[in-house]
Length: 167
Image (cartoon, rainbow, N blue to C red):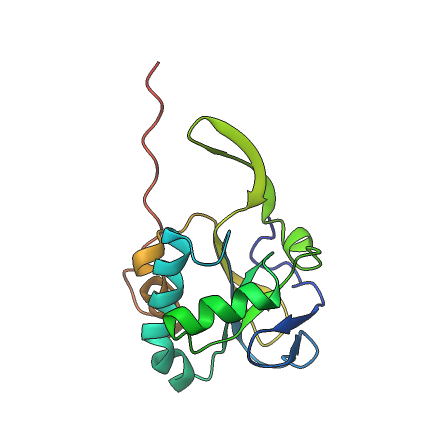
């Protein structure tokens, strides 16, 4: 996974609502890329709705928000319509941005291992470098965490750590 200070990869992806979105078109602008596993699943819906509900605050800071998953445009359009999402979702089924960002890998759910997208968020600075990273995200309040960081407010809260496995 990319770290603070790394250059953000160049990308051009289709969105559900904003046509093609590219890093070149965002040059000189600070923006948020949040990666999520799948449209219309419980955690992803909570996270998307959190960004939707807080979007006016991001707009007020002139910081666009983009959700990114491996779902296609059709799935994104359905997800956007169902939950009245008001920011672009970028379709990356070929993992042109997902892989270079380092958010694809082995996951475990209910004892089953599989390959998928890690829930992670990046603030990309106006200089095109990764400014901040959240490697583990709690969906419900994550947009507020990002806003706290963008405002430079004290009390930046990271996602809670999972308890250590008992042996």
